[in-house]
Image 1: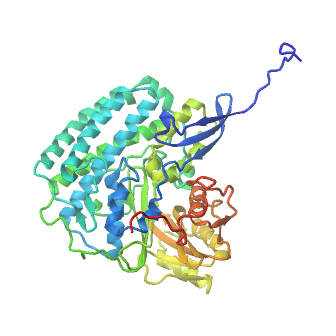
Image 2: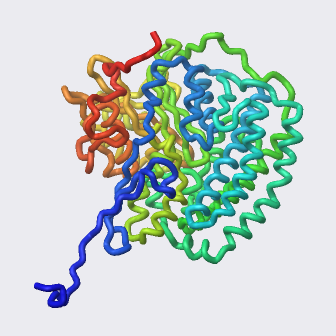
Image 3: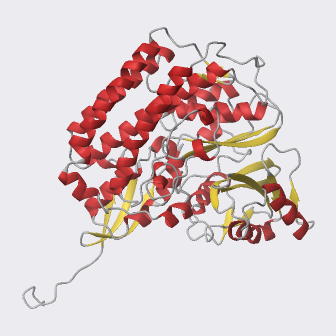
Length: 372
Length: 153
């Protein structure tokens, strides 16, 4: 039968491989898409390209030796990973921290949250074809990394926190520089709004795209800004304050559509709240020691503990089982990106290929934390 | 669910109901219970549907040595905030545990990870394959019997 005789056009499903080296997969992540025309029928995540065996490595390291490894989990939010880890070890040992150390930690954690959200909104816009917003976001993120360099000597992997406190006290120039940064941000938010949030193309490509309903989010264990963009205002800093968060006055932004647009806007709103926390932390920063008295060799008592903090991507949990020696018997890292990514195939089913790119960018995962 | 029932009361209730097959873990930093594997699915379902612990926050496992494994689950309720650890000893030559993917889709990827790292079989899992390591990887690296090569002696 010739083509001319074949009146009915034959169609078939197409399996499309996306990644692992794909500009919009944010690292080495691969998706297998089954397409009907341009619509996604089925999607499968393929991960593990960045697996370094962190949890196994931890078994051969002492407690302080493992700290720099946590920087390499979510490498866009190193300070938050450190905070979760040292707090878990402290909970196991029952250490009380001097107040100044707690304040310094909160300053670093909130700065890191802003830096992480800036990466997200910058790369989100980049994935949709806007290169300029990326530059704006990285200009501001650079200021935060400079602040980290000032106190810790490193920008991305500071290894600044210690069990029982922090590595070093703040430089005299730190607070003035931080104030300058805080003052510069409102103008930047206006720029982001003008260049991205109010952009017609951006709105058309994100509104109503990749909807994650509240029920689905909870069932899939999705946490962090992604959950709060689906209408559920759960933030661990409010629900179960750890460290000294109960001392701060801040709001938890909530959006109700659960689409990519809301997941973008909520991050800008969260940055504004983080700035509020920073202002209060500077105003109330007490003097005093930055390190609690802890034994020279850290040997937590035998036992198990689970501790979680509100990371920049969701609940970051550490489970540590100690056998009483100076090395952990087991460390399990609950990376929010790993769990959030589990909800992605369902979110993308039924979307067009271009919207898959939007949705991937909007849930903001970091492969270092997914693969560990 | 009665929001005023405290976590302690829930645990006491369960310990009395499943006498001998469910026990409280004493001297634990977090509230924790230990359940027999045959009972685990039922208890998890009960905690989710009747006691408001409806959020699976973490799922992992422990190697206890001598071929014994333990499943570690952390269930949570957001409001009021509660966190409960459930420990389930896996039995059998080939360690297995019941899958809770049916109750929480969140368990899907996490059970696959534990299968990958510990070789624990999750009975009832829809797609139990390796997730972080490649399909041709031999062994399960987080088992204590898996010794990594070290350059530091």
